Image (tube, rainbow, N blue to C red; front, side, top):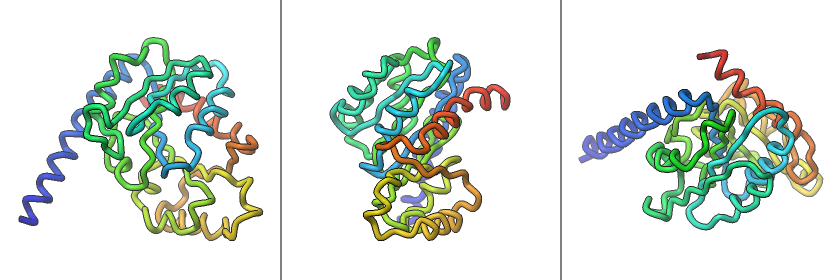
Length: 226
């Protein structure tokens, strides 16, 4: 029975990876670079996007917004006057706590890929499942709020290992928290040594220009690697 359960999981991930490759082929065909943005609920992904995407210069960006239900975040991002497509896992996908490749594939016909250089997929807020499912992205960003404590990299290592960039958000709250940033960074290095990291505040805007610059460079890096 144990071997059967493992095989079922392996088969599901293999099927997901096959669809993810098909998604990547579609994105590549249109010259669109894709970033998968992940975090726990409430870490500040949407607010970071509001600020960072507004600072992009010369990069045509769009967002695929993942949530279990509702369109609150998509409604906010649409005020930037960029293409935003809502993808709810509660509508035909069993209310999953993550986006997988098949879900993203279902949304591709609604995305104006020919008009984009960069697509940001804002994943469902969760610290476990999103890291396990590739969706056809070129890069992954993990957002970690200082309000979550110092131990999150040690408790949820896959999320921090599966990304190219870790953004530590809400640093404006540090004076009000009993948190050691150096210990948080040491814990991050313990699970993903040397991963690029940024300390930012989506509320004040501190560090957001660095995130915007990183996002703006993704299309060029993807083209150079092709």
